[in-house]
Length: 284
Image 1: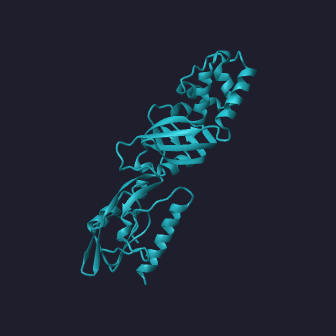
Image 2: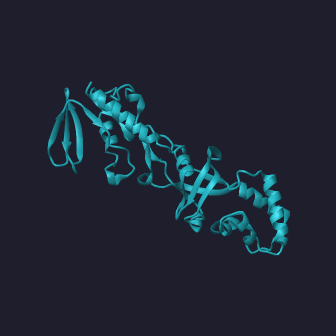
Image 3: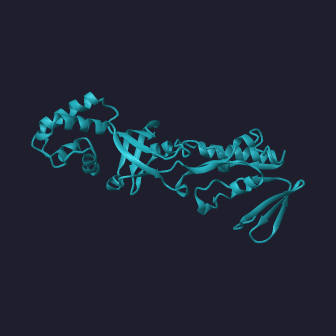
C-alpha cells in the first residue's frame, strides 16, 4: 500500500509486470488491476491515467465524456431563476430535434443552467460524437393538465382578475421567481393587463406552460460530471473475470471501463461488482 504515490508507467516483461512509481521506485507483480476511475473528480486522483495505461497495452479507448452532468443554457435565462427547484415537472431533452429523454421528476435552476435528477439522467444519453451538438430542453410545467384543461384554467384566472397585470395572475400558476423570465421568454409583456391579453397570446402562454424551451449550449466540464462515460472497450475484457483479452493477468474494474448508467445507485453497483469479480479472479 503506497499513499500519495503516482503510478507513472506499467510495463510487462515476459510474465512479470513492472509498475514504475513517481518516487522513482519500481514494483514487480504477477498481476495488475487497473481501477483508476475515469476523469471526473480529478481531486481524488481520477485524472485519466488508466486510459493511457490501457492504451499502452494495446486496448482501444472509447472517447471519455461527462455523464450525469448539469447542462449550460445558451441565452442565460436560467441564472435569473437560480436556486429555484421545480418538482413533478416533465423534462425532455432533444438532440438535433430528436427526443432522447423524457421523464417526470425534479429540476434545479443554477447560475449556469439546469441541474437536478432528471437533467443528470438525460445528460448520459447525449451522443457526443454527433457534431455539431444541438441540444434543447423542454419543461412541461403542468404535466397533469392537457392543453385544453390548462386553457380553461387560464380563462377562469383571467376572468377573476381582469384588471390585474399578467405577471400577478401568473403567480397562481408559477413560482414567483420564475414568472418574469417565463413571460419574457414566451414573448409576453409581464406588465400587460389581463383584459387586453389576446386569444393568440393566451394560446402561446398555454404552449409555453406545456413546453417551456431552453436552448442548451453544452454540458458542464467532465471534471464536474458525477461519472465519466467512455473508457476501455468492453469487447476487449472478459466479462467472466474482468481480465484483458489482449494481455494475460491484466485486469480492469470500475469507471475506467466503458460502462455507465443513470442515477439510482447503478454506477456504484458497476464499481462494486466489477471490483469484486476482478479481485477474486486475480487470486483464482
